[in-house]
Amino acid sequence: MAQTNINIRIDEDLKKEAELLFSDLGLNMTTAINIFVRQSLRQGGIPFKITTQTDPFYNPSNLKWLKQSIQQMEQGKTVTQTMNELENMADK
Picture 1 (cartoon, rainbow, N blue to C red):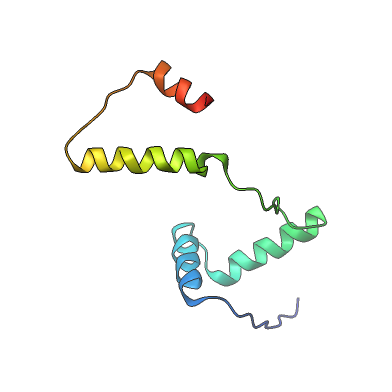
Picture 2: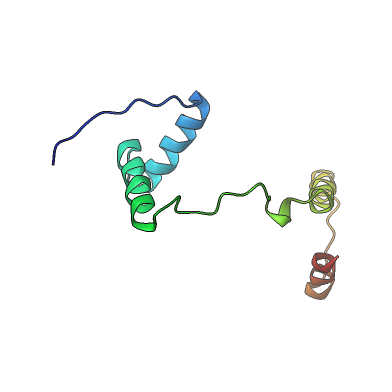
């Protein structure tokens, strides 16, 4: 199979992060992009959902609670909660 080159532009920091991730997976950038293209062709589209929706974990309420918890831990104030309390917080 004949090989060809493609050129893409990507943010430098994003490229570095991707290279680190792919390296941890035993891949290089070329192999990772080839996997993406092959999966796209197999599935007849992008091989993952593209959406404007964000992970509900990162909603403003959770982020506020996480920041407060981090501040408390940094100040040496730890709060221990039961699993039921944590589950109740997740339901809100």
